[in-house]
Image 1: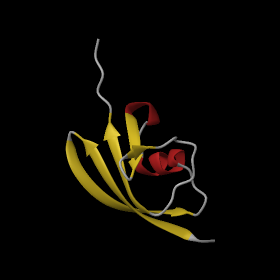
Image 2 (image 1 turned 90 degrees about the vertical axis):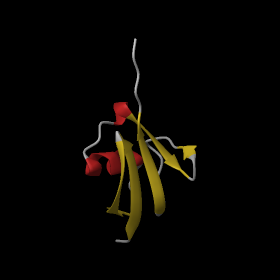
Image 3 (image 1 turned 45 degrees about the horizontal axis):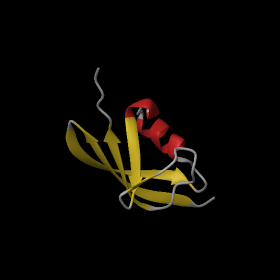
Image 4 (image 1 turned 180 degrees about the horizontal axis):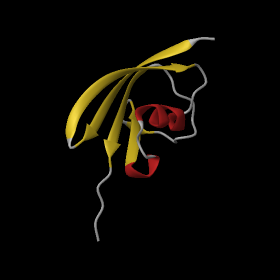
Length: 71
């Protein structure tokens, strides 16, 4: 089975960068599970474009940005 090598930039109060390996065919839900991040609290970007959590991850760099809301 092929493995995807990802660089993940996490924007959550401060900017951190980490490396993640996932099995080929993994979704962005799988990525967030690996990072222990609640999908209801973030938006994921690939090449500056938001992606659907159920779409298949491609290698490269992914940005995960925490969403802040208030009322």
